[in-house]
Amino acid sequence: MAKSKGARIIVTLECTECRTNVDKRTPGVSRYTSTKNRRNTTNRLELKKFCSHCNKHAVHKEIK
Image (cartoon, rainbow, N blue to C red; front, side, top):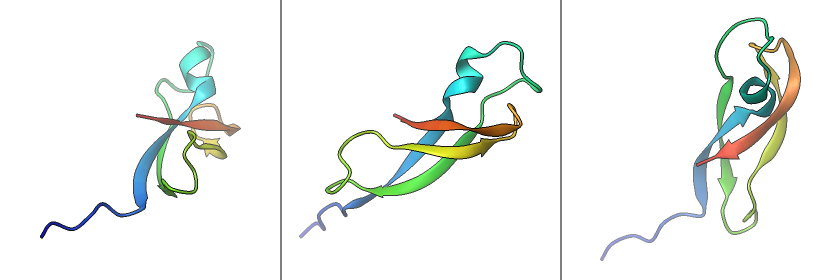
């Protein structure tokens, strides 16, 4: 029998300010990977993380 999928999945978080801001310190987009429980957190994840391209703490949203 095949095992069922686990509740925890790996998600990618991307900086929201890097996508929209043209005047930033360095080119590129900051990305982090994290895990979330798909049963408890069904919505997309949003965390404040440090963006090395913006050089400040910014909101990072979950991307597909």
